[in-house]
Every structure is written in C-alpha cells, then in structure tokens.
Image (cartoon, rainbow, N blue to C red):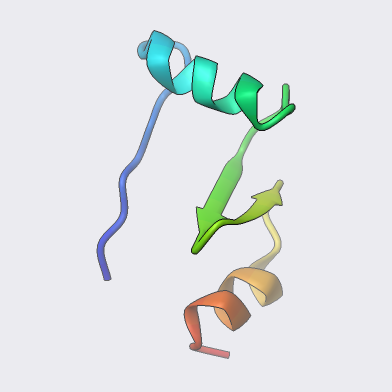
Length: 51
C-alpha cells in the first residue's frame, strides 16, 4: 500500500490543500477522494478494503 504523509507545519502547500478542503483540523486522511477527519479505524479499513 502506498501513501503520502504531509506535515502542514513544514509544508505550506499541504496547509493550502487542507484549507481548500474547508478543513482546519488534523489528522485528515483522504482515500480515493473520501475525506476522513480524525482517526476512524473502521472507515479507513472499509475504504482500504481490509475490514
């Protein structure tokens, strides 16, 4: 499984991406266009097909 970690404190572009989503909270996980704010193990596993 491939992923990209982004740190909004060190990466201005990552912060801009977060703000474009209309969000101001972290963590944010985006899987196939589905945005998950906070940590929701069940939803992440479902979207990855590993539940």
